[in-house]
Image (cartoon, rainbow, N blue to C red; front, side, top):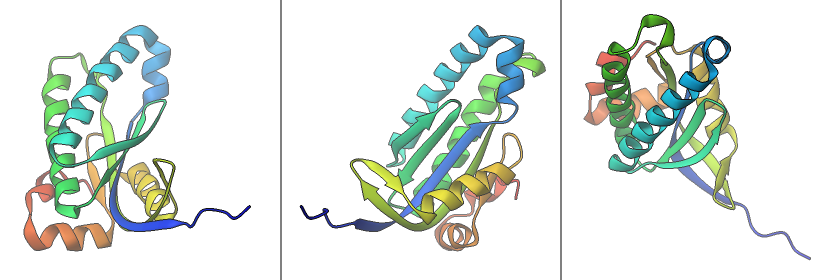
Length: 157
């Protein structure tokens, strides 16, 4: 039996997770999970509004694919702004602050999932983003800056 051909494409990958998630869950698991659910709904809505598709979630993380680097950057800014408004209404010890990393790179599509360096690099860049911040790879920054500078106001890297 022959393996199906590998499908590759260029994509902007947005990776996000909650800074200090384990601490938040340990302090109040139910409240943290309720807040996470509400925030994920907002993230999904804003990603879709900007042409993104969620292709993975695990624990407190979310992975989103965009066909456009500019739309990925705009979505990240919109997400951080919306979540900041929600967090402003919470006590500081209960705030869920997402770290967002975005990479523009080659990905492998496999049964609705995306794999490869394009995804892995986005996840690594997300790890160095500050809480409530956005970190872009050089390729992403170059593409996003050619048509939009709005991401700069929310970038922490």
